[in-house]
Length: 214
Image 1 (cartoon, rainbow, N blue to C red):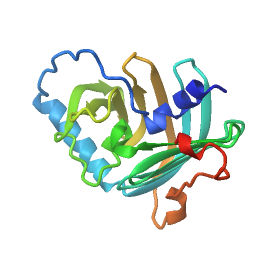
Image 2: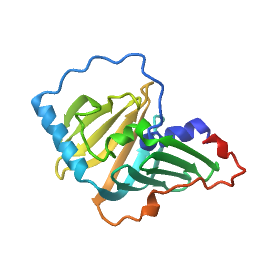
Image 3: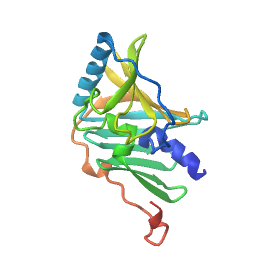
Image 4: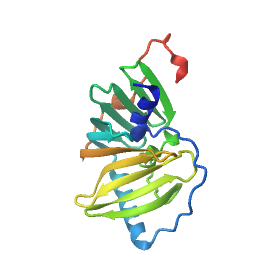
């Protein structure tokens, strides 16, 4: 697996820093009905303090991987990919770390430089510091497309929610070139008492092996 492919696999979770967009189209203000859905989503996410479930990730080339996800707001997440992937992605509240046991590589990125930070924030304010570019209604749910209004994170993220029950069921991260990586959540359930060690990921490699490449 090349370094680029490995970065693409992590894109849906870490949403790695992306090249700046040359230009962005003007975005129309949200109407009252759209605003209600955005507020509904923000309230739900604010209450999702700890959760666990399963995920299936599909990259831009159609390759799928799966694993277990743990979320603990603010700022913490763990995505443990199943074999043969070898990937482990952990957000510790400040950074997103990506370890690949197959390639024996380790990378770390600032959490605030990723669209993932939008729904891991301490205070979910989808109308502050975030630009909502689209709200779409589905048969039993809706999607919200957003990007960082401060431009710390390039690209955009589309969050998908179900109505019955109200739940986050996935997201899609699109980079500046329009390449999309999709995450589908299944069985995401609220929980409590997740071990702090789940959200710690140190460089597992010997100090003599490429530690300066993070």
